[in-house]
Image (tube, rainbow, N blue to C red; front, side):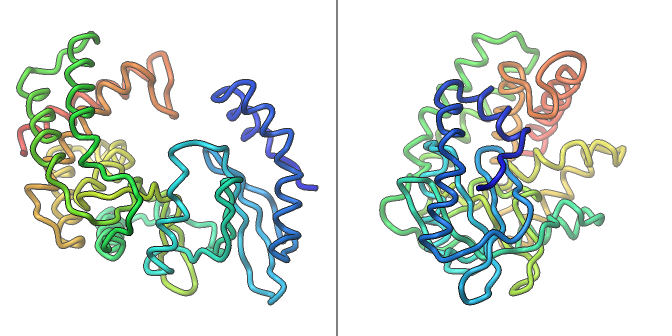
Length: 310
């Protein structure tokens, strides 16, 4: 029976309360049952992400794999659908799935991520090329982001009314316009939905493979947001934030073969969302205190900068 990483257990209970505690009590048994059913044996140290445990395993064929079991959450419902649609094209292979248990048996990649690439332009270009490869015709049944566009616009308006902030009206209005214009007119293309460097792993079958997709359908340019937010501190450290952001977005757009103007508009939208989200919730790296205030200030700066570039 596997041991549950303490940090994962603590975070699950903190986030999910009694439901999380009950699920954690069942989790070792779920893992054991799935390993038996899929004829696997444990093969390494159990790790975890934000919402799931990752159990290295070896199949009866000798092939290395991982068993991923996630806490039941709407954001995880379509992850296996995305892997099935890609069938190994730019993402890890899906071997088995149990949707009721939010579990998958996946191809094992290496533990190192794209975040370890020191050259920022190379990192962004790799993410852009993956974005292009993952943008395939979407299968039916996946959530279409265009159906969320009106809710996005209303949430930004509400946050602008309810939260104390210094964002100029033009910044807020630009983000709302993107939600209402680009958001309502999105193609039927499968996108990753959370394509930051931590969700891209080194691999053997291909140099880099994506993991942890959201399985959503919409504009591939929308995916620049997660990458930009994850790179914000590194871009700030370069000294000239405007120049660094502009180069990042242009490198991504070129590698992904996307319209640079559309990439910039979505990046501005994400920056405004992040500025309001930081005020309501903070971020994982800084929930409160001076650190959170610093993140809020950086989000504001990015939002205003991206408005000038849009």
